[in-house]
Length: 237
Image 1 (cartoon, rainbow, N blue to C red):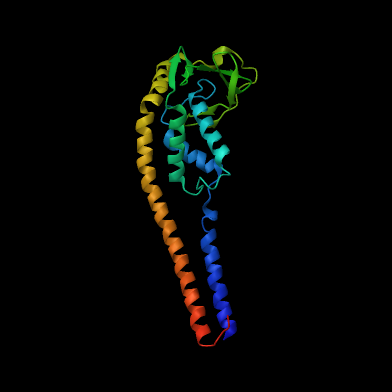
Image 2 (image 1 turned 90 degrees about the vertical axis):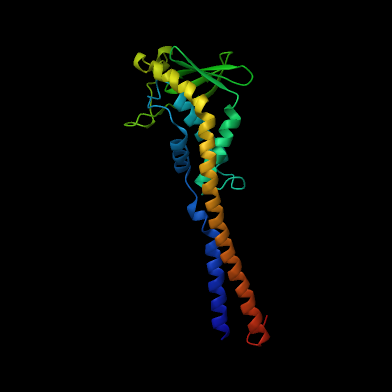
């Protein structure tokens, strides 16, 4: 009888261990997180990442955010893509909320909250973000948003001409549109994401609550089980 009781207890503890590790199996990879968030946030037209830096820079910000925070499991649930989309949207709004974006003659500019103007220059296969003093403050790889050839692209290492990041004439109007639309539509886009992510986050929280309740019930019945049989003298505690 004692062997059966011991086996039952072991089975219950094994089940509880499965409950506590179930979320570890659902953790998303960095690539999955970046791709899922990018699909919702980028609404610009397709563009060769070596010709115009806007998409490349915004993709770079997303990659940087994931890389910086991925090991932080206290503030982020890396299995909850809905919550992560909301958190990135919040981060992006805080970072760029007071920035202005402009496009003049095919060159893209950012002016930050302190009035510092940044422009972008392609050099040796990477975009260089350059401030008003001519200092390079950031570098990042070009990123394609062309439907038939999306993803990071490799630019020629010899391509250091200032013309390399100008938009060709046929795309010039679209480039102006894209730069202004990003700033104008950012708030509307964030509101949609917040609404969708809040609903999804609530569903995820309910699912987690159900799992924890199930574990608590199992522990409760284990205690009752041991107590009843100890009272009957079947086992000793």
